[in-house]
Length: 412
Length: 133
Ligand SMILES: Cc1ncc(COP(=O)(O)O)c(C=O)c1O
Image (cartoon, rainbow over all chains, first blue to last red):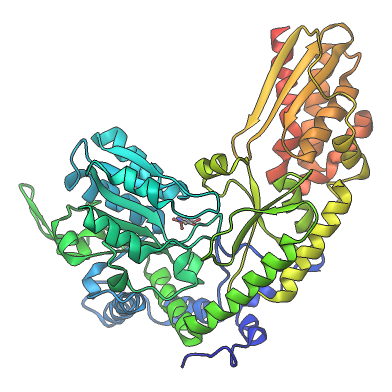
């Protein structure tokens, strides 16, 4: 059952997240750091405890009751993830540790076979290091080129720069975020995919942030690769996903070698399993995968329509209240932006802001947010960042604004 | 545990007594924290252990650099080394030390392990400078 905006009850949702009742320095916890990692609902915690208490064994190998039950529960999550992002088939879903591993998997396997030295990979100026460093490592190991697509001053993809980067036909992969973890900007992924394909390139989408806030349809986007982490989506750490089109996966060599990923092994020759197992060497994160399944069920039950409406209201409220505070500067003004807001304050370093807010029970992130080149582009060394989730309230944003006013008084 | 932003810290951040590059100095040292981009440059005149500095970073680092310059004035390099040692102990344990005077204002940092380096960075830079004297 999907919630509508009318039935969206943030108080009831907060009751689902045990940690939100915690106090910090004797103050109510105001958790505004969900973009780094989200808190977990009771349903996820219970699902993971249940596996360990009642239904646990290794998967895909035991011919006994517990192993079969656990394998079924584990593989059911693959179907769930496929449905969640509307993949054409379950074989297109590969379980990894996190989005970072998903992107590295593509760089190591597809990158070293489908790309030839001299081919180029293009990324944007607002990538997380997770979608930059693997392509630099590929450049240095394999002789590919790395090109940077600029962003505009408002923090959106600069399509003139995109045209220039693709002009000589050497770019074979556009690796780009769907939502900036610093600026909150959504990128127009359908348009970018169309552009990449028209220029003979594939597209890899870093969906880490976007997947938490919007319904994803990898077929409608026409994504070749799509990566995300479970822990930002109210699921546990240790489980991530790589989606890739079946025909691409069929051609990709394995990532790591070991159990699970083989068809047959002898000393002379090993044949590899078909996707997705070819890319899942060793015992997977069974408990975490089942936790991710519970997180997807949780989000689906509320529905992205209601989540997006709630978060849009929060973002507008935050931009209005923080944006008018004396001395506070919000970075980026993208038309299409979500609940991630980076800001600086005149006279106060981001780390001072974070520590002083923490004294008031308010958790924000401060630093370069794993996007150092973007900091350079924005002309700052660090920012403070508040990010919102489905359990965030307007009162919490008001608490942040109030906290910022107090900091202003200290440093003015 | 005391508040990490005592009035003295904010005061020295806003109105430092030893900020800026002096016309003459005998040695210099630098400290950088790649995690947050904080950077400090320390200039020492051997005579009187006269310390000035330039910083790019947070209030904790700025105030720590300023209070350090006060604390080491007139001391020998060996005494500075002892102060450095005692200061590291102060900000990691949170236990105030009467020998450290106003530096005790930074004791509250012990509760913020990620911020301790902000306060110790100027001391590392000074140690580097004294190495070259
Ligand atoms: C946009 C973006 N990409 C990639 C990542 C990396 O995620 P993980 O550390 O879970 O692999 C993050 C998380 O911080 C992110 O925000």
